[in-house]
Image (tube, rainbow, N blue to C red; front, side):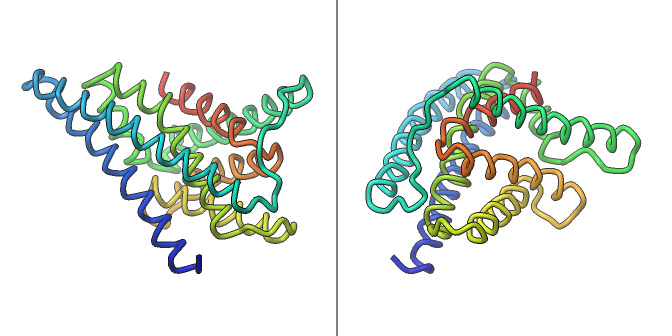
Length: 220
């Protein structure tokens, strides 16, 4: 599969994921005035999300079965690995608190993405929290770390891994910000930590756990 075809495939994963987020946004907009329609939209979202997760997971594991030069798979959850994961979570906390401090000092503006998400949580609390904390970390890690790095940065050379983490983090930031700004650097920094986590543990489950904890802290 050449680079162009891989790029089309990967963009396709982004599109079908964004369609899923649009369904939960639709349900949120209907929650106050059209609760019956909102419930129907939530039902559609749950079915679509389950199918999406199954498809993306299947594609990711199929990739590894076909070609896996980085030796990705399952890494035992030893005490040492858990402590390392906690350390990476602390690093993400430092980024988050530094970011919050810059916002409180009016050096950086509150991200439009975060503002919109906060408003959605207020309008439809349970489902938006459940989606952002439980579903988004899984699908985003599979797309932005798992599939992306396996598609475009397959070699296990150190410079290839470094470049892959840098590019995936930058794209992750762009997907949340959509423009070049200091806020892009903050989102990208979180993406770089997650990219490092993936290549350090060689197990996507550690990424999902770290992303889950980060989103839970940010929203709760």
